[in-house]
Amino acid sequence: KIVFPVGITNGEDGLFNIQAFYKCDAAYFLDYNGYFYREVSGSATRNFKKNDYFKMALEKFELDYSQFGIEFKEQNIRLLKSKRLINNLVSLIHIGLDHKNEMSFVDKKKSIKNMISNPTVQQVITEFWEDLKSNKSKYHQFILLWIKKKSVLGLVLAVKYSNFRNRK
Image (cartoon, rainbow, N blue to C red; front, side):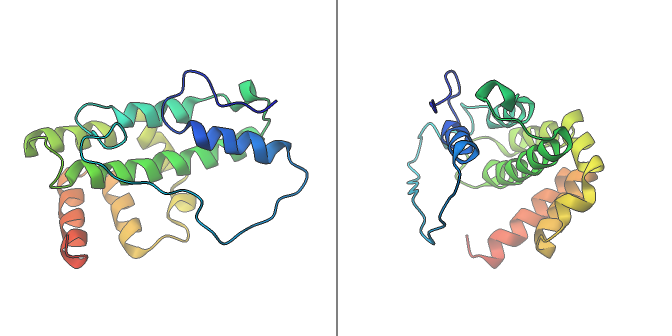
């Protein structure tokens, strides 16, 4: 009775996996990466200009998992969903500021500003601040700080520094 969710076009594999793990009695961990993602220029999963990935991330945050037969304690699920939302946001900031992104720099900054100023993002980052930065690298904590302060400039400089350090 586990099926891919209908009407969800991004992250449906994750929801399928959650249902599978929720229903199983035992699991075995293999140290193997079973997914292979290939980035293709202009692909549906990387077309930042065409797709509103932030909107998709917010929709996942608001998703009621009980509709899939999965019951979690509300506070636990809110924390987990908040961590996922913020991790998605950090990825979107990096993708949005990537030199391969065809948007103008002004549009990139505007997009980042809209994401980090979103009331849900600000509520989550305030509510779970300690949990979000726990066990994260200094760089990730630095990014979280600039999100909390709603500083596009801080994020641009941090990502440029990261790209320089990683020779991108």
